[in-house]
Image 1 (spheres, rainbow, N blue to C red):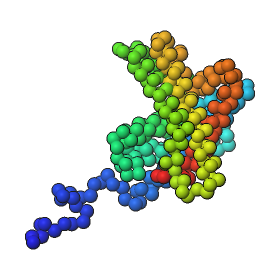
Image 2 (image 1 turned 45 degrees about the vertical axis):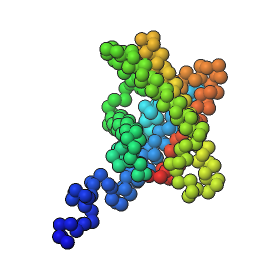
Image 3 (image 1 turned 180 degrees about the vertical axis):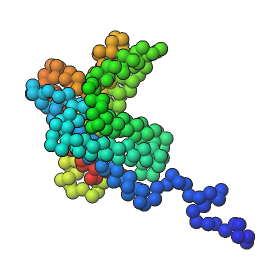
Image 4 (image 1 turned 30 degrees about the horizontal axis):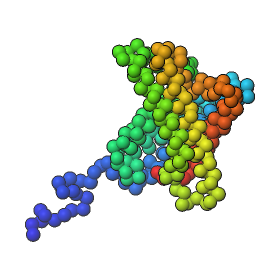
Length: 283
């Protein structure tokens, strides 16, 4: 047989080398470490947001209960600047890990929808990383999340078909929030955790964190989306609300501040769930 027909390891039918998109063991370990660092950073921010929301519920709030408010609280602490840059690193790691899922697929699954979702999350965390870095460097910290939502809505409404565009974004956010709530109740998040390595007590605790935390996060996202839809329908950008204003609105419902208390506690749970994900998530 001619030597030209001998199969060589690492070559495909076309004679090319192994796809460069397949990460080796070293790269996979680095990406897993990056993902875990990202979950820790996310956990810190959500715990702080939940605490700020609790302060608002009990009439003690001064800072906005959103990412900007959380960063302000961190900056006010001893070694606050170092802590902020540590968060920047964590969110950069999360961006890298999410981007790797968009390229390589998650746990071997390479469905287009899943990869596009990962790409979207990578873009989101890249913006979070950039915003945190800007705040740590002393830039971009003047306007809160509420003002940014309203500024974006006002700009979008001025575009041709802007009212429809804003409504679509609002419906998308609200739908995503409701989807998070449904998945929390169905406990689908457990599929991404190494539950076999948990004790029965740990699994019960992590499940409670995931259900309560994801439910609260979904409610806030759905609420923010609903306000954007209202802003589109009324052609009034001031109706759009960020996380802080959305949380404040919960305190003005017939349930009074207690609904905000429940949601705030849920956001704290989601922060702790993020810490659990850093330990138990299959990456």
